[in-house]
Amino acid sequence: MSLIQSLKLVMAPPHPAARPFLLASGAGALLGRALPFRATKLAGTACGLFFGFCLYFFRDPQRVVPADAHAVVAPADGHVVSVEKVAPPPELDMGTTPVWRIATFLSVLDVHVNRMPAAGTVTRIAYHAGQFLNASLDKASELNERNALRLTLPDGRNMAVVQIAGLIARRILCDAEEGMQYEKGERFGLIRFGSRTDLYLPEGVDPLVEVGQTMTGGETVMARL
Image 1 (cartoon, rainbow, N blue to C red):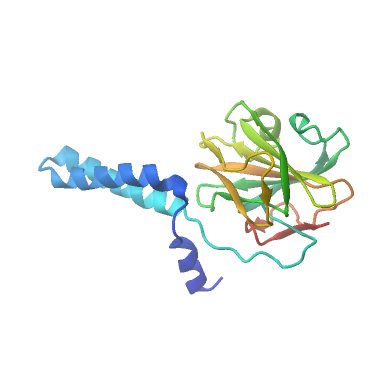
Image 2: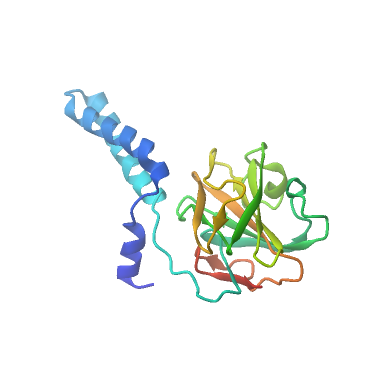
């Protein structure tokens, strides 16, 4: 990645979900530095640092989605921690036949905006309350708080995307609603402060990525339909 590309990534405008954090920390920084007390100035400095962190964490860069109609793209940035065949989440009513699941772990340094892996219609959304284990652990897929989406493709096949909260993440944001149609690479949500995103491929579709590989949401091709 060139220096210019790196700067564009870091300086990307924030996702709308950042607004309350930026307003609160920005106001705290200004007020704290304005008051003539050492404690308030320290608090103002801390708020200013948090303001900078939020600008970085909530950055929402533009992505170039592959033109290949058969490409399935990464629903999140991060690195692949698991590629294995398992049954789809039971709450999505996709049957019990094992399919390929690709799990991507997002650290606090990754872009946290979630994107649709393919064009299709959201036909089911199911939220599941759970724990907040380290999202890099395999058991996080079953035990952690999660929000699962079933995406029905134009040819009738289904795939699933699951937003999973992690050790630090405590808030899953999902803008999608059942019945909404999405284009490949389109934004649909975000998970705050470290998380994991699982992609369940349709039956008969094989993954094109491996454990340890770095993903770029909306751009990296994970499979081909």
